Image (tube, rainbow, N blue to C red):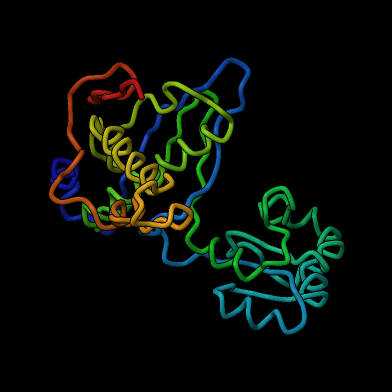
Length: 271
């Protein structure tokens, strides 16, 4: 991290940290995609459009939605009176969704058409909006590599590390849901907008330790002094460690040389 910052001196508020993650990709499989709530969001302002009506409108607005409306809003969009360029995401309640479909050809090309399978059509619209404000979406390319921003150079090392671990943990969890075994994350490389790549050789080991802590907390307690059906954790939950842990460079090291990323050593290892 210090090396990257040195090469980006004077531009901490402009440039970003980028993460490149080589994921397992079986022949014929669809590249992994998903979303995660990062401990330190990358953007302070996510503009959300919501289709809803009635008393719920005020609740959704208070949850952080930029614009909330019902049939009148749908009509304005259909007539071209409401601009959509500033919105990042859109949600709809179930009851008004049939009307939203009438403007699908307008919303779709802008990536704003709510869809049930993506969880953007829901009756729990307040929760959905709150999560969306801090939710970070990722997707691997055809080679199974996720290329994504993961933080700003103005972040502390603890904040950056928390974001990296949260993303990697979510990727692992997605693979577990599909019963994937073996090495699911092969390589992890960090770089800045203009800086060289640095292999995160120890980050997967750190992730292993956090998973071990989480698994221990989820195990039933057999000690007679505790109720095995309602165990009391004896340590902070792993997610707490991810947010607060760090120190000065914990788990981050660099190695030079790589055929895939110029000037990068890939510290991938068996999981």
